[in-house]
Image (tube, helix red, strand yellow):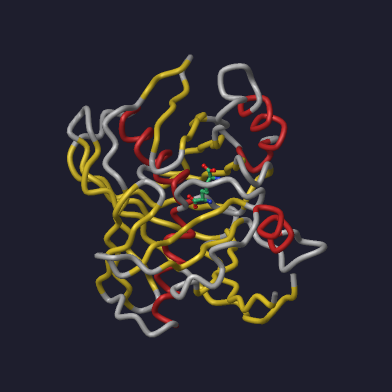
Length: 259
Ligand SMILES: N[C@@H](CCC[C@H](N)C(=O)O)C(=O)O
């Protein structure tokens, strides 16, 4: 089978995008997804997204991590909107289905505003936080995180008895200035640090607002290893609503691969 793909990246988190609106890639196996994402034997990517048709929404973004497991991906969601624009869909305002439910998004001037799920539960775990933003995240605040060994720390948390079965994404966060964070993320399903994680920066921005009791409207800028993202939301002291992840979703190259 010949796969026709486009490669995209959002703040350095990179994805293979497939147009599957006619179902031609419905039978793609987990092994094939792993091979396509492999950086030595395949195209190379942190994840793969099939754009499926949907009965009531503009499309479905069917996301797979590089190991073939499924979740919602914030950076991937933005890239799915950019790719859908390339496919000819009108995505100035668009609604699509993701792993965690329906999403609204807007594309203007190459920047995608992606509406994320509301967050009602922020769990405190020994001074760290655990929350679900479409995928599960562990948030640890620290200083001088450029020097932090995120790989060893991420693996220690992700594979401990509490999380080993389901897995968790592990973020380390530094406050650079008021409302400006630096975030590094170890992603489950990639099992390594990625250059950015959209659901991760969303979780970190929310945990930061919660930690500092920043109620009301929040606009948090986040530096990641591969660029800059923003997270806007309302926090009422308990719940986060009207959550938006803002950033690019950039075309890199396209091609074919025989599998
Ligand atoms: N890179 C993503 C998150 C992808 C899913 C995650 N690895 C998981 O399995 O939970 C993002 O940008 O949100």
